[in-house]
Structure formats: C-alpha cells, structure tokens
Length: 71
Image (tube, rainbow, N blue to C red; front, side, top):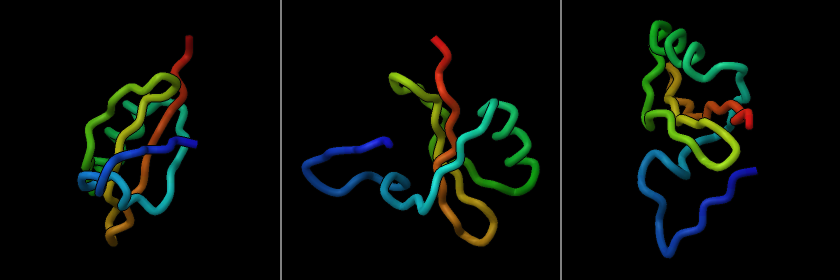
C-alpha cells in the first residue's frame, strides 16, 4: 500500500487513480501502453520500494502502474 499524506488536496493526477497494476517491467509496459493510446499523466519515478507512474487509459480510467525495486 502506498499512502500519500498532505495538508490539502493532492495535485492532479494523484488521488484520481481508481486502481493500480503491478507489472514486471514498467519501462516495457509504458512503451506498449503508449502505443495502445494510453496517456502517461505522471512520468515514472522511484520511491523507496517501487517504480511508479500514473496513466490514463482510453475511456478515462486513471491507474497507477508500478513495479518493485530490486535491491
């Protein structure tokens, strides 16, 4: 679980995602997703234990796409 704590509203697109997907390779997944018409709303970034991005799928579904960081 990822929990974001703020003193107010989260900036778009954070807080608008409806679900999340764990993938094996976020780079490969995002290339394929873009080719299929998915908009990347938040470029991939690294947290302590995962690489994550926010994507908007055709039809408007916003989701987190993530993969675990291997230490």
